[in-house]
Image (tube, rainbow, N blue to C red):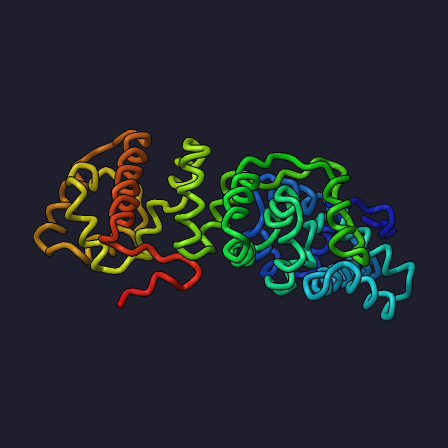
Amino acid sequence: MAAKLSSLTGREKAAILLISLGADVAAQVFKELADNEIDELTLEIANVRRVEQDVKDEVVEQFYQIAMAQNYISQGGIGYAKQILEKALGKNSASDIINRLTSSLQVKPFDFLRKSDPQQILNFLQHEHPQTIALVMAYLEPAQGGQILSSLPQELQTEVAKRIATMDRTSPEIINEVELILENKFSSTVSQDYTKVGGIEAVVNVLNGVDRTTERTILDALNIEEPELADEIKKRMFVFEDIVGLDNRAIQRIIREVDNETLLLALKTASDEVKNIIFHNMSQRRVETFKEEMEFMGPVRLRDVEEAQTKVVNIIRGLEETGEIVVGRGGGDDIVV
């Protein structure tokens, strides 16, 4: 393959880069790719016959520049990255790299806010419309969003949580407008496609970062206003595999509450880590009985296993609500004394 860099496709450049980096590094990269990406790159690599050394060097250099640009963006945003690159490479080269990077990686909106102090963001947002606050928080890191949500006035917390949960797609024009209000120096690179943001998972992530008092206040209010939404959020607040984060006392209480058949089914597809922590809190005789019954259980429907795991999770939530066990939360108020 004798070609100039400008005539190569992105896939061809990726193939040349992996060839240049060597088999060991390429294998590590492949571990991070999806199956279809591996298939496409493997075919591309197989089609490479000859690559001139200067083309290899240019591809590696271009990759290095993009990697450095991404690093600068993570440190201080697009504006910071562009400023550093302009000093190092000149204005034209810097613009080319930034454009190439943002078109392929699509840097998240409000990226610069993720580097800001939550209190500073709170001071700016608390007087904004709840929909604006919800939009911004949906893009923040969950822990950061949790801190901000905990600090909002109580009557605003539920409204913002509800809007995050029911948010679906937001046009790039609106995102751009909010970004410009928050940071007029920020150079927006939002894709022209509608950006999916918010939803149940987003509000669950945020609520997992708040203290228990805030969580209860929001869920109690949602129970009144949107009972189905509140129920869906509660279901996702704690999943079966999260059992590994509970202490032994809590697990022993759960084992006493769950019937054997349900627990056997729930453990059928559980990770070794979950099984080990459950077995650790049983008597040796019961563990042996459980293992024998699981071995001779035979095939079961995945739906039945999932239903059993849901039953266990519901029992855990019930025990938590009555104060019999403690499920850890962000915010530091779940200290047992």
